[in-house]
Image (cartoon, rainbow, N blue to C red; front, side, top):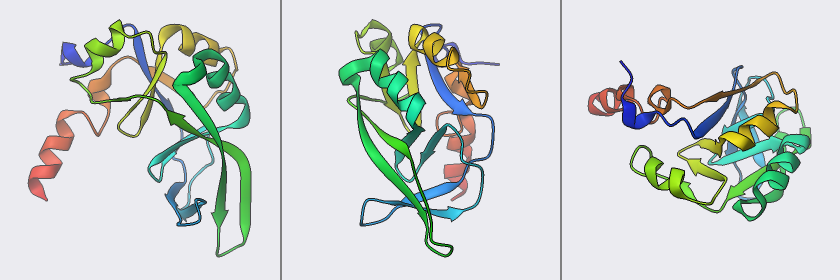
Length: 159
């Protein structure tokens, strides 16, 4: 059963369909690949949210000052591989889920960071869907997110 305060018809969290690389931020500001995976259109890792260029530009065009874009470099030091096609999304506002969902719905903002997730309004979701990035998914059910759902409480008690 879904907890109704964790569902919002106006807000959507953005995810990718594939298992993506696991990253951590180095002291140089670069992101290092520490566990393999696929490079999706969106990477929510290493304490940051990274997006490929076209997705980042579309988000910035739709959301304006809600999102600052910073160039991001991803490295795999063992193989000297380097990827610079990503932008870091620095969101102006962070949400605490579920407490801040009602406030966000009333806000004039169009994008937020909620935990490790990118959260957008419905019209922004529609614009992103028009990009045709097949690995992106959108959901208004925040109870399914590992970091906000009931599994988190259970897991933290065991640790």
